[in-house]
Image 1: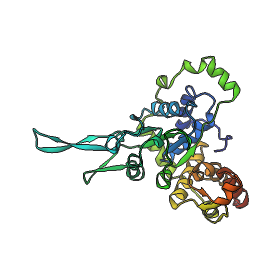
Image 2 (image 1 turned 180 degrees about the vertical axis):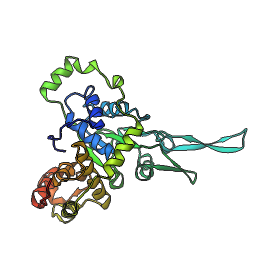
Image 3 (image 1 turned 30 degrees about the vertical axis):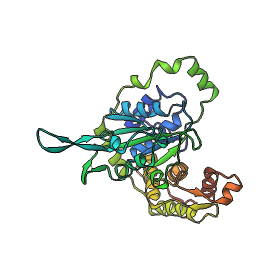
Image 4 (image 1 turned 90 degrees about the vertical axis):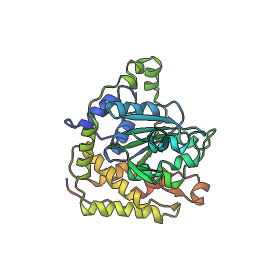
Amino acid sequence: MDKRVKNTGGNPAWDVIEEVKKAVIGKDDCIRRAMAAILAGGHILLEDIPGVGKTTLALALSRAMELKQNRVQFTPDVLPADIVGFSMYQKDTGKFVYQPGAVMCNLLLADEINRTSPKTQSALLEVMEEGRVTVDAISKPVPEPFIVIATQNPIGSAGTQLLPESQMDRFMICMTMGYPDIKDEIEIIKGKSKRVSELDIQPVIHAEHLLAMQETVGNIFIHDAVYQYIGELVKATREHDLIELGVSPRGTIALTKMAKANAFLQNRGYVLPQDVADVFLDVAGHRIRLGAKARINRVNADAVLQQILEQVKRPSVRR
């Protein structure tokens, strides 16, 4: 997302961002991007090395919005029932009673999701897409709003395994936080970052306020020319000679929603082509699979997507 996005006042989403910034030092742009994904009603995948603040960001966001939050540390012995719940027989009633799993919350922090088994990873597929879980053929909705923020270690780290495309596609955005710059790192080692931890973050909005903002984001206007621009960008990912798997229709929807959220953060009731461009890499980067030609030439996904942004003509839409 473009770092030029600024707080224009009167927007509760910015109150959340400012509160989270107290605990997450030097990552203002990451906080904005995560907040945009939440406003768009999507899930977030944070891929980075351990120790750069991924978990702190997730916990601070949940506290700033006073969301009911559950955290699961994904390890090889975590079972699907731990995630979605299970039915337990009660002798006194003679009935099976549903025991809620970790997903029965507003914000699920799935820590190191790529360390668990594919069977457990797949337990999240239904709930992330449809907002419900099915146990013993009975479907139960999760609370609203429902957000999954998952962290994963880089592929190749000890004990990790690649998430399948179907799982990756359910995350609205994938982003990395990266190392802090030297100024922020000096501030961290001086201990200033500990003056406010994620446990000290104060709620500035509630779940009902978030739902209202998500509804507002959904109603933001998009001109037909901008819809065409979104379609052309997605089409280009499917036809590029360095990409063997392009952005899915689910990705097209995610790109549209994120562009609306970006406009909302700038207090606009309409989407500009720049909003689409600002979020394109976050939405599309984890949804494409590069071909052998790209790998041989050591071209990464961001470089290819940036090339697409430069090649696809932006429509002229008046403010």
